[in-house]
Length: 223
Ligand SMILES: *Cc1c(COP(=O)(O)O)cnc(C)c1O
Image (cartoon, rainbow, N blue to C red; front, top):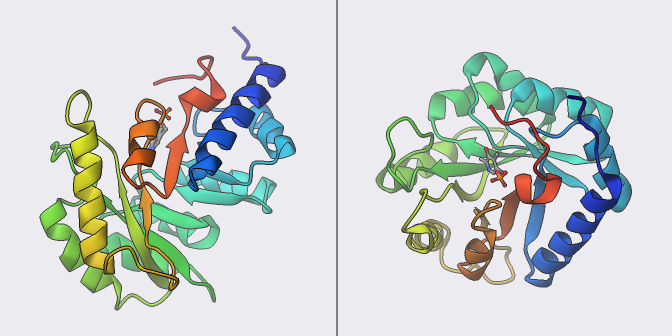
């Protein structure tokens, strides 16, 4: 079955969601990992600039095609794909180990890549991210990696219960690691909240939400 984009509905959802999220002072990343190019183009035409991808090659391809947009990396990165992140990502949300961070840093060229540490708040085995206990050590180690700038934390809430609590825990960790709410000097990012829980994340202090299905709709291909 061919996938067709209902442009009108997509733009309508986009306008409603971005209005709601921006009114709360939060950035909205359009998670385009399952969306066809046509849908990406539609959102760009409607004014969206910040996109997020979970696969390095797709991030590279789309950043080459739409270099005026920001392409955020939110998925796992293997070392052999580190160059795509170093070269093309506007921000790397899913940093969870030093070795990969060093590999990414080798490819940033002259720029500074902002990096978030992914915290595995659900402590679910098989999920990515460092445990909250291990985040301070990784944050410390990242300060020595030239080309990267630690800019905050990212998390995915557990499925089911405990969503709000998880967001609160990561927010406290952010406040501890980055010195409270950081006045004018600029605040550290808190990338949390997806389609099913972004309103809770906004209430709990997210600075960026990552919206996929609620924005692009249900026709997307899920694996
Ligand atoms: C896919 C994905 C999202 C978006 O998920 P939706 O539930 O479709 O909004 C957000 N963050 C990460 C890390 C993802 O992999």
